[in-house]
Image (cartoon, rainbow over all chains, first blue to last red; front, side, top):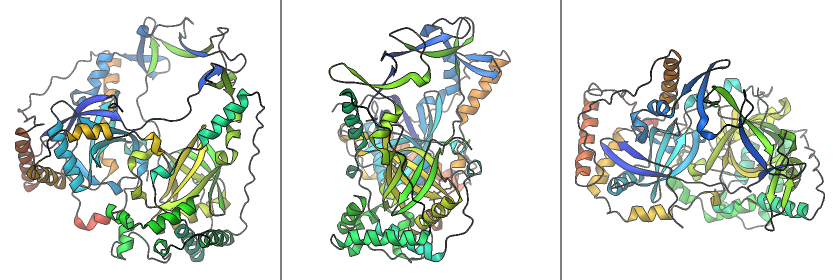
Length: 315
Length: 297
């Protein structure tokens, strides 16, 4: 496989050290690529840029970027002016803080990139990589890419450095705007214990390779049916059964899960007491501490037996 | 509140919680409109059918898939919903895992779940509380926008947030880059120690509110100036004292040592020597177990 095309060349600045790097996309979409077609005659859909005033198609060279300062009133910025806005630091990721990865709420993450060493940057790249690995910390920096500033997390992932763009705090929708309906009654201790017991039963470990997009096959099968001229019946809306008693349903879930487990091999290592003191108190117990701090090596203790249990739970 | 992006039910065990899904993030970017340069009027994008040259309204646009023989199969959204009716209506929680097991590279987009009514709110709150206590996040899957998504669901205060998690095949191989990296000489123990010491000196607790999008603010200032008819010119580059631009040996070791000396020097005089940086809020050993910085509070 060839080295993925680089999207951006720049520098990671860390202390007085400059690491020339290239940015490569770490992810790619595997969704089925549909094209827009006219439903009536099947014709291909073209996107045409049309001037509102003249109603005529406009060639690309005649398009500029305008910012609407008042209704219908625009301030036009040229490419050069946009570059000035990017500033002289546009090609530098200034990493001036380092944090523990588990402190970052996943909702901040945006896009992931691999960094490769830029010209003459191999030595500095390896030093930064080794130091990130040793400290187990994540560098926080920011940079401008595509005329937008991004917060970025810089981490060592096995043998390469990964940079992930992150949202700024004000880009996260505040809770106050969410209007989440609240329950009138708090859960009882019994309900909470029972729910935790169910979580324990469904305890697993995340292995990316275990999951594949099966829906894609279903869509491909549908495409084949439609190609043969079959009519596709609209699906019925599923009837969601509303539990009369939450506690009863939880208990039934646990019984059902337990029956599934008994039919397979026992996995005592996967069992965890649901009555552990609340997480968040590091001194409560070693295990609780490892839960909250998420120390990586603790992962190794996720036993094979437990994984097997998770597989059953997940299937 | 905005219209939900998806609604259905969240199911774990035999419990079904009717939920609605909203984006967890909002767009704060400075948006530009495409304008026609000669007359400064806005550009509209029109969808035109290549067969008859006529503009096509939204409800007449189908998803087309080209077969190997060149024929096109047209699908409507209803057809696609029929491909996996259950998955399109239900987020099935398959297991609960430690969040630290999910490499952040896999995270894709963030959403917020909201219970659809008060009865659902009870089960919703219970699941959140139980997950917080057990230190686990839920892993499930469902179909939205004609794509299956693996998702992780976790409590954030009283709110359940959902993040789509990429499938392994959507994450590219690192091998080529790793091979390129491995060609360089292994760094010396001393270099790595110095670099790790710099990291330790710069360690803080993650506080998202500390970082503001300066570019956005800068862009808005430039727009204001341009609106007033001012000419936009690049600021003169500041003449900085020559920084050691060190990316390769032997300067690299010198740059590492000098960085460390400067950072420690600044720390020793309480940040007085620092020119622009606010003194970093250091992380105390006692705070090692601090929980995630809450977002959106």
